[in-house]
Image (cartoon, rainbow, N blue to C red; front, side, top):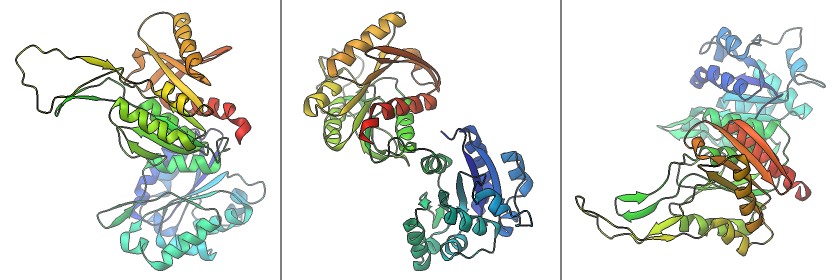
Length: 387
């Protein structure tokens, strides 16, 4: 997600600075090169040696005759993005006022003057975050193009956002945006059909692939809507759906003003008329199953021009058979491409898939996060004429 990206991590004096060692590791896991800049206040919370270990680079603790701020952010500077995490109320206010009395604020001034993207992850007590002056400073910085990663407001504190949220926002700000100004709908995870008030029919899908696709599309600049029966995420607006019928109805509705829909959900093929009360155990039971509507067919019928991407899961047959079934689905619903894989991928972090187009087949093997990035790249190529 951050391959070949140079990130300067600016650390201010919030207790959340203790989390920056792991944040630096996560940035590097996503492919970034990281250098840290730290304030005097932060040095009382996290030792520069810890950040040196986490980044693999010397830490800037003061601006010297080496003019570190210019070397990092001046013309032809090293950095592709400045990430200030955590950012205190003090630091946010100083950056908005162009006050340069710490290494972090001085780097921010040069970055903003040079047009280097800046991402800020605030962390402070909630009353400080709600102070009119701090809110004004945030609004001012946003008007200059600074991206903020909203904190988690809990227990009277505006706690620093999750590493996932910070890394994703940094990738969105720092890397090319082939899906900018486009809306992508992603379906994800398993659906479930009620048998009675306590039992459901479902499947083993974890939703990892769908969430990875949504995250990668967001990092590539898209406005993402995620349809699933799962948690809220920082990279998409989430609509909760449970059954196949709910998923299909939500997809048809969401696709009305979308540029593309990626159907990565494992949608149940059958539903049942549920009992109003819990079915008693101990005896035999017969369920009459009825087929559910096909989501991609429903979306294509309602929205003939939207770009559609499908997934195809099989349990048997060789790659040729998998490709043949993927092409059947591709032709039936007029899909841009189909991602085909086998049931062994369910639930795990790794996968192998075939990206099937009308005239080509390409193999992918690796993490589901990487598959999400591959799908986003394929989608960007498909939608290139719309950007």
